[in-house]
Image 1 (cartoon, rainbow, N blue to C red):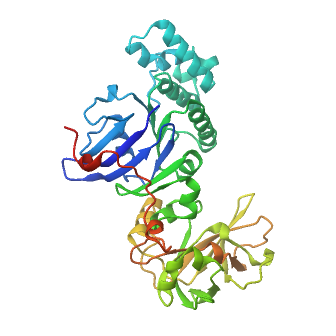
Image 2 (cartoon, rainbow, N blue to C red; image 1 turned 60 degrees about the vertical axis):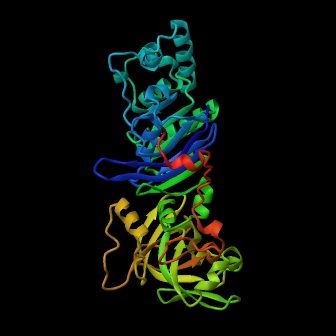
Image 3 (tube, rainbow, N blue to C red; image 1 turned 120 degrees about the vertical axis):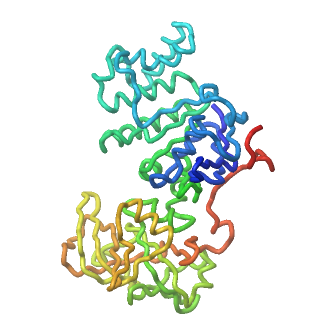
Amino acid sequence: MAEVVLARVGKVYPDGTRAVGDLNLNIADGEFLVLVGPSGCGKTTALRMVAGLEEISEGKVSVGGRVVNRVPSRDRDVAMVFQSYALYPHLSVRQNIGFGLTLRKLPKAEIRKRVDAAAKTLGLEDYLDRRPRNLSGGQRQRVAMGRAIVREPQAFLMDEPLSNLDAKLRVQMRAEIARIQRDLGVTTIYVTHDQTEAMTLGDRVAVMKKGELQQVAPPQELYDRPANLFVAGFIGSPAMNLLQGELSGTEDDLRLEIAGQELRVGDGVLEQRPALRDYIGRSLVVGIRPEDMEDAELSETTDGNRFTSTAELVEAMGSDVLVHFGVEASTVVTEDTKELARDAGTDVLGTLETPHTTVVARFSPRTRVKVGDTVDVHVDTTRLHFFDLETSQSVWGSASAEEPATDVTDETGDEAGKDDE
């Protein structure tokens, strides 16, 4: 096991394309860190630089205290699990798992011992004599993981290992990977586009956009205290609702107007976000999580904080009901929301003649709301999120809260930005 440090790491391709810029990460010994972000954000490139499969253009990568910029991939003592299983079809499960050890010419007894131990950990003991074609997708992925485990590396590097599995099997394998990593205690860097995977697996999650780190923090902190609009919109399913609003009133009676409907900002919000005082009389972006809204008919709260609209779509999920309704508010258009729209494959940011934004609320399954019904939606205004329209940064009140929580330790000094000589 080992600490992995990326200090001011960058990747620039010969044509001038910058895939990763000034990436600083300190992955602690035994930590499970997840890199997440849209396709093309640089997360896989960053992982491949740690593995030695991509040349490092700038900065330094250290594994176990050793700078590995010039160290060949085979000598870095890391094991990578790819999106494709990359199994040899003519070899048995036992031979596939032990293939790397055979190449290293370890004694047969040691190979058998390690393969048997990995097979027990992965639940593959009954499949060791089978060929890959006789295995399910989940079993093949376990074999690929077994091949990494037997090497007893200092770090595991996983590049979207579950993307080829169906939804039900992905959930099962997520739990398996979490259990295996916890039992082995090996430092792990895991790349995924799926924010649900990121939130359920990682000790910490690093969110990337266009090659740059946006925020790195424990999953719940990312969810509760996103550093900017991009993190807020990317983390969470359904995504956070983003609306343009205007603050008015006084500190003792702070009001928020959205689409002609007025809400009273909850008590304690100004204490948590003192910088909001500077936004009274100004427009800003308001974020509302779907679970922070409920069917007003079922609510015991009588504070009057309600939207009134028409239900456009109702999705019964069993444990809850997702209700989509429109508000007459202009769509929030920033570089962050444009990137989120591109990632989602939508074009919701086009110019609209009539301002209209669709909001999603998570209702109790006891609701009786149907498509076309007038719906009163109660909003928990103590749980609102606020962002600056120009900078897209979250509005808090201190520099430390406004900056992305990168939690970076630079152990390479002033020379970190230079390549290893």
